[in-house]
Amino acid sequence: MEITLERQSLIKTLSRLLGAVEKSQAEKGLSNVSLHAQSGFLQLRATNLDIEIEDRLRVDVQQSGTTCIDAYLFHEIVKRARDGSMIHLKTSEDQRKLVIDAGAATFDLQILSDAELPTFADLEFSHNFQLKAAQIKRLLDKTVFAVSGDDTRYNISGVHWHQDENPKRLCAVATDGHRLARVANALPEGAEEMPPIIIPRKAASEIIRLIDDDEAIFDISLSDRLLRFRVNETVFTTKLIEGTFPNYKRVIPLDNANKLEAERDDLYRAIERIAVLADEQAYSMKFDLEDKSLRLSMSNPRRGEAVEQMNVSYDGETLTVGLNARYILEVISKVEGVRILLDLADASAAAVIRDPADEDVTFVVMPMRT
Image (cartoon, rainbow, N blue to C red; front, side):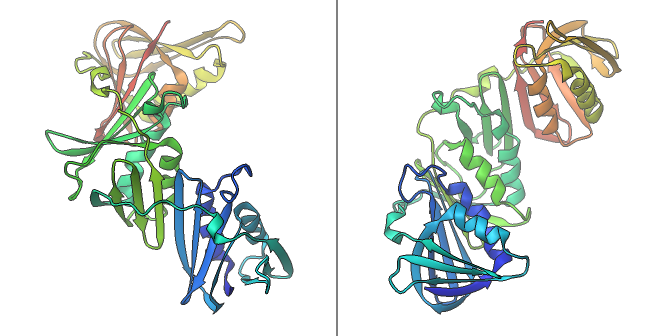
């Protein structure tokens, strides 16, 4: 194999592929990237057995061929090459090394057979549909932060996609048992009767990283085991989490009668100021509400106490509720409107947070002792 290509296009593609590379050397081949050059293109592929990413670049192919090299090492070499430089790759005659000319520097890297890099089986997909990049980002970015970090609770360790009825919607949901995020989108043509799926947390984060143009159209294919995204020359495939996502609708209160409305940025900054006292043992913030007034307070026996009063729009009874300061800040950061709504019932009921600018987004945060 012998090819020449631009550094800029190669570094961008390698950075994308690292999301599917296994950092550990324990599994032979999974820390590598496959390179296949033919007919004016370089096909790159990486996998960690859970995620597979393929991409294709137009290059100058002097000699067709295939090889497999350490992905992180290759990425570092290309990253440190000078901007605007051309990268020349050529396998040695004995096919044991890849010679890389990167500007003034030359590297001889040990290589493996492409056969040592596993591949997903070529399976059939039951449903095929399209979504804009901005829609995918909205469905995943506004939910993945709420995914459980406890991998033993496998059925909530990912983002749940399912079809909802009345009206028909494509819904994304995530929860860790303490908070919940739900986003709905118009059901795209081809997604009717799709099976409910759970996208692993890492895969969801990597899909978001693929998006660099909100107007791009993604072709999406899924079965009960695999999910595939295709955009331009990039193909992203992930295994899905097996299991049944819990009935999340029963934890979303529908009749919280106490309504708080505030400026999003003002509320965020006020909570952030008081939360400076929080640590791993103390992160409960008290919300005291009465007519047109919200009093935020926090007490930490190791650090001290803090209080802040702010004017809000509040329709409800005098109420005190405790909420996790970090969770509330994360939720507010996902609200895009200039104002934010909190629906409350009492000190023992979950708080519902809504975005007036996007009625299809709902967040729930469970209460804490005050």
